[in-house]
Each structure stands twice: as C-alpha cells, then as structure tokens.
Length: 556
Image (cartoon, rainbow, N blue to C red; front, side, top):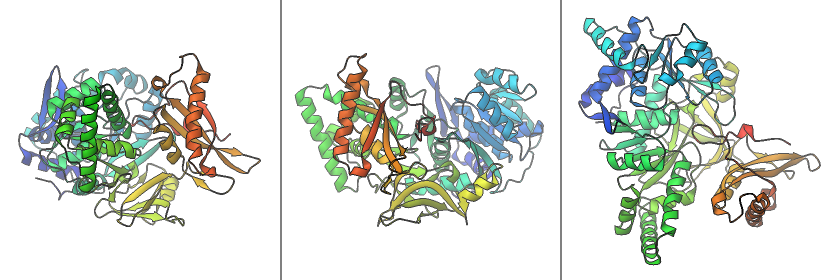
C-alpha cells in the first residue's frame, strides 16, 4: 500500500506502523542480516524524537549526522525531523577542517556520528553533545532508543510540524568547489518522493540494494524515501567491491539498484571482458542471446525481454534478481544502457539536483528512451529557457520540489530562483514526445573563436567510449591570438588495455594521440581537440564519482 496523502515526515512516520512486521531496513552484520521492521522504524523514530525533546533539543534546532550509510542513519533522521528539527547530513569523506566548518556554520546543537569521528568532534567542539550511531561511546544509539521508549510511556511531547518547516540543509560543493547550503522543507522531500514513485511504478515486493552514500539527496530520496513511501525493503550493501556486492545481491534477491553511471559501466564492461575469455562456441551462443535480447527490447518499447541465454548469463553474473537499474548523478553512456537492457535488465536514467529535492525527471521503465533523462515527474513544470535555433537552452524547473533557497545567501538564491523558476545551470532540449535530454553544463560551455558553442561533455563521452581511455576531462583554453577558446583534453588512459612497457610514457602518449586523431577526423573543425595531456593517476572525484572539474580546469 502506497502512502501518498502526507505532507510532512511526522505524518509519514505515523503511517509506518500500518505496514506491520515487514522488514524495511536490512544490513549484513556478523554474517547475518539485521532487520528493522516498519513497526520498529515507527517506534524507534518516535523514541529518538522524544529522547531529544527531554534534552531540550526541540523544533527548529539543528542536528548533524556524520556517518556512512547504515541501518541507524535513516532512523535518526526520521526521529529528528519527527519533532520538527533540521538535519545537517555530512559527508564522512570530508576532511577535519571541512567537517568542523559545516558544523559551525550550520549551528548544529548535537552530532550523531561513529566512533571514528568522536575525537575530531570533541577536539573542535568540546562542549558539543555527541551521540554514537554505531553503539560505541558513552551515549549510543540502542540506549537512546530504550530511554526514548520509556519516556514515551510517560507521555509524548506534542509538536506541530508543517509542510514548509525545514527538514534539511544540504551542504554541497559538487564539481565546483563552492559550498552552498541547500534548504529543503518537509514537503520538498515528501512531494518529490511521492511524485517520482508514480513514474517509477514500484512494487511492494521490490528490494532496493543501497550502494550510494545516504547523505546525498539522490540516495536519500530515491533509495530511502521512495521505497518507504511504496512499502518496499532496503538493504545496505557492505561495499562496492564486486565480490561483496554480488554476494549481497544474491543473498537478498534485490530487484532495484540505484547508482552513478560509473557503477553500471563497470558492471557491464566486467561482463563483456569475461565473455571475451569464453570459447568460440559459447561466445557465439551468448552473442546470439544478447542480439536477440536487443531486438526484442526494441520491439517492446525498450523494455527488456529475457531469453534462455540471457537468463543463464544473468544467473552466472549474479544479477538475475534485478528488475531495474536507475542511474543518476551524471550522463549514462547509451552503449552501456542498450547493452544492459539487451542482457535482460531494465535500466533508466533520471535527472535532478539537490536544489530540486532532487528528482526532476525520470525515464519511465515501461517506455524509456535511450540517451534521454526522461519525463518530468507529475505536477512539476520543466521547460527550456531561451532556446537557441537548435532548441537547446537552460533547463528550468517550477513546483513543490524547488528548494526554499540557499542557507544565508539571499543573493545566490535570487540568481537561482527567478519568478518561482529554478535555473539549474544545465543545458538541454526537449523532443516532440516531451522527453528531455542534457547537452552539458552552462558554466562549462566552450566558445570557439568562430562563435561556436561546444559542450565538453559530448567530447568526453566520445573519448571514454574508447577501450584505451578510462577517464577524460575536456575544457576550453583561451587563445589570445584567435580571440576564442580551443579544446583541451586531459586523459587518464585505461593502462591495462594498452600494449606498452610501464615506464614508456611516450608509447602511451602516442597511442592516446592516435585515438584523439581518430575522433577528430570524424568531428567538425570547431569540435576538434587541439591539445592533449596524459595523467598517471585517476582524477579526484566527489563521493558520487564526478570529477572535481574546478581542480583541473585552467583558463590558460
């Protein structure tokens, strides 16, 4: 049974007990899966809220959560917002100074964290109450729940929580390096989850395998709130290591997997590499099955149709239980999308940003379009602002999912939200069926001396689609003489695939230059790469695996 008539987290938590003893959260601990039922989630959230009330941490107060994804994270979040408090989700991969700054700026009154971070918090904030999420330390999660339950027996503190109350302040720097606090209300999150689910068409039997960090809005809304709204179950994966990920998939029979495109690219290329090692007859059989799967999917509105061969392939790969994969956070390569679908698994991509809670569009699993970010979720307006003659312009959004604004930054808020429309900074276009497509970031646009606009993402896609290139970053370098930008590519090769001696860097450079020449020869003059730089190491990335562009882009 879907919960679709609530507007606050308090209303949502009050409805959870209707689901009874069905498991909602699961995590492997000590070999077995520890489970939290819907009834327990309802009880624990209320208990945590009551415990905080007794400590005089009330409506409007801010609570920081500093922890990797785990069973307790969502329970603490729901407990905090149940009483009208505001949660500050923090990235545990930030450095000590960044963590301290965000706690200070947000004016958090208490921190929930793991044993690892206690010394860091105590060093910078000696008087700050610190509660542990992993049952270590003096005030631990299990004790808080027990005490809260006992407090509830004495009487529950009544609090009025409204849809417009602030649920979270999300500090996100993304690929720009500039930290902004995105202020999101209860109704921002709740409406986004309920409306997005209408396009996703989830089933109560669905089991989500959670692999992304829950402090990110994509993971929080799509992989936590959406399943809860629909009555599904969520399993927290131990890690992204192939062996453990596949074990967790097999043992839980997960049907839904959300991730960034890089995860799906690695899964797909891993299967393809294994296929190449099979004997000739087996390769011929599998290729036949995949080609048949591709044809059948195209005849079926891009919805996958499994056959005997693809069933066997997925069983062997440990992916047979998966019904749908959902990619977000970056563009999904069309060849990966079509390849996975041909193997018999539904795969779609969506689009969003923290400022929109974050889901804006989703490619419907029952009628997806390759390369598209899909249709706007119901009741949300999305349009192309100031399109050029090719129909490309900035994607702007209006509706209940748009943030309240940036934390203590009126000027930036006014620039971003104009007449109720959220200006995303992403460029794209819409086709005749209403499906949207991303072409690139407005700020990354390269303007050549001839006045032509080039989106670096388009060239990056061509580069990383080649077997010899693992990662690529493209940006414009200003040429004073030509009075315009030329295209530069910084490339991290797929060293394992290049037949060169390890110490012979010139050999690698020559191989990559051959690839670049091949791409240039097929491109119009204004889209040709002028200079290439080879990297020894991977690019530094955000926790959602996006390259931190600001660290490498140089206007030379």
